[in-house]
Image (cartoon, rainbow, N blue to C red; front, top):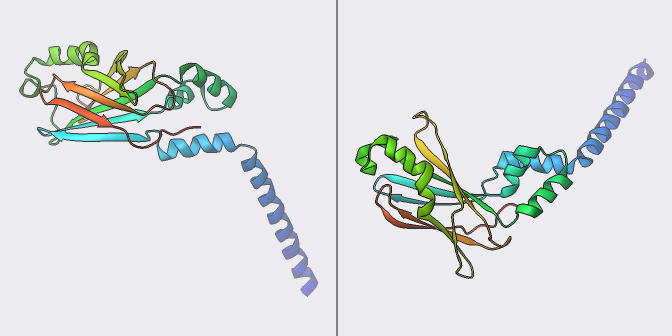
Length: 198
């Protein structure tokens, strides 16, 4: 009787151990995918700086270029991702959010001193002239483009993506913003953390 109970128990332990070994082998054969998953869960936005002026919170976040490469190419081919990264490693993407502390729409006339349509046009087409990046060597890099994410008053913030080129791969930068839209002067965003690397 004891042997009858003991045999299924031993068989169960052997099957459990074998399945654990298979799971371990599957996880170790996919370390890149696991790493991409962890980075997505932890957040790709590795460096940010904020300022609060006149009830407006300005937040600038340095987003690693690999984030956009993986979003467009997928994470199934690490050598393709690395190849694309090597041709774009001197570029920087910085996300800037503008948010009113009372969650009011910042493009109203009372904040911008212009009508709503003109404020939207300014954010879409003219705002890039208000941003520059300063490298560690003191070089000034002009913004090469801006993408204004329209949320049509659904979210309580306005967000833009700034694009810079010609910045050495490991160079730390400082973002300088001459705020002509809300008339809050010059704001400097110094990024202190190292960007995430794959």
